[in-house]
Image 1 (cartoon, rainbow, N blue to C red):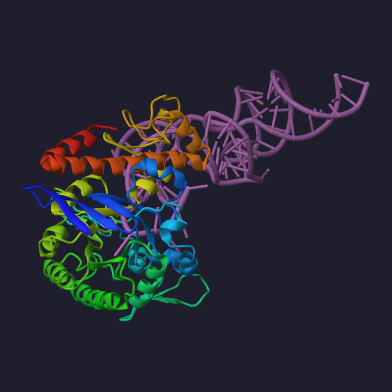
Image 2: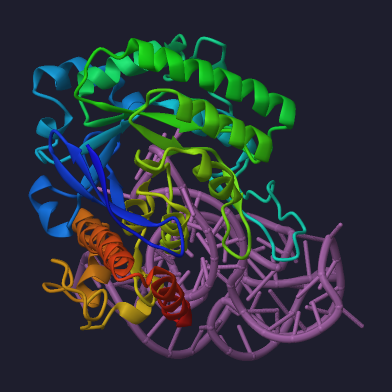
Amino acid sequence: MFRILNKDPNSRARTGLLETPHGVIETPAYTIVGTYASIRHLPPELIPATKTQLIIANTYHLWGRAEEIAQAGGLAKVMDWNGPTMTDSGGFQVFSLGFSREHGIGKVIRLRSDHSSETMANNQNKPERNLVRITDEGAWFKKTPGQPEVFLGPELSIALQEKIGADIIMSFDECTSPLHDYEYTKIALKRTHRWAKVCLDSQTRSDQLLYGIVQGGEFQDLREASAKYINALPFPGFAIGGSFSKSADGDFNILNWTISHLDEARPRHFLGIGKIEDLLDGVLAGIDTFDCVIPTREARHGGIWTKRGRYDIHKAIYSQSKDPLEEDCSCDACVSIDQATVHTLFKAKDTLAGQYAIVHNIFFFNNLMAQIRQAIKEQRLRQFRNEFLANSKKSA
RNA sequence: GGGCGGUUCGUAUAGCGGCAAUUACUCGUGGCUGUAGACCACGCGGCCUUUGGCCUUCGGGGGUUCGAGUCCCUCACCGCCCA
């Protein structure tokens, strides 16, 4: 199911083929997020031209539709996409609707170059109500105001994911952040590990790849222990999760601590990452697949990603521009429409605006991954990384 | 000719004696990393030693008042109605 094709002698980067019942994925690959079994603002017929290889949906959000999706033939069918799919377990919502919300902390925390521990509490997000209660068995969600809590744990998550029927599924985990202390992180990790086993034991289908998730916060010993533990279980693939920091020089310490302990022959997914630099660094560290809301969410918000940087198409300077969203881009949006038109559609709050932006952004990220694959084949990934970043930082 | 109504930040508005003055849009600047949102935050008269201070503003001119965007007189322009 996973075959490594090329290895970069100067890093852990590799190219490979990941086989699924719905098709083969060339790795490293980007996973496009379609939480509710649809990529927001993107009609299914426009997906193929975006070079998308894999789409991830979410168990938590599809909770109430799992049976219906099963009856209809599974996620890929329901999405009218019929390519490879993945589901997240709902584990991240334990964090995003809980601790993350309460403390206004996000997925990636930037550290300052002087190490002066930037503000993990530098969130401008005001604290909001924690909607999650965690127990050793799973998580209770206050899903609907005024309604009783609902329970999601490892057994149910797997049962739901089997109904939803994606090709790759995730074990149910508890995501912790750098704001959690060692003691709590250790307790949460223990839980995640136990849940990982429960997930394996709960699995009844043999045609889905269940990935085990590595946690451990920002504590090296916990991360290492987690990688070893998960590696020892018969998962066909791995995912690395958590809310964590990234140093000013671009290092994800958690990757350096964990990947060497993960079986080389099995695919590794980096959950919820990322931006251009993160992808390049992630691949160098040995990651095979990524997923992130950045291309789609920012597109809806007017953020256009290009090889020269990101810009906001809302700005008035684009109101008359006859240029495409990105010069020399061959995506469906860039060959058919100019910046002024997309700008105007955004100002008019026409959802078509988001559609053009999404087509472009998804194509951009998928295309970047294709270039990364090529660079690995040609053994010039590090050089490609440095050049690409130098160009993208010039100006936008 | 007569009678009303109006003239406030780019636009549209609020304001009925203590106001550098409401709201919306525009505009500007940030942000968004396993989707709790096609979103969020901040700024938008000028200057400064900026959790504050000073100056100049509400069509023009004059007046009343400690104090006027707010009240009075007058001029200009716009709108509606009656001749």
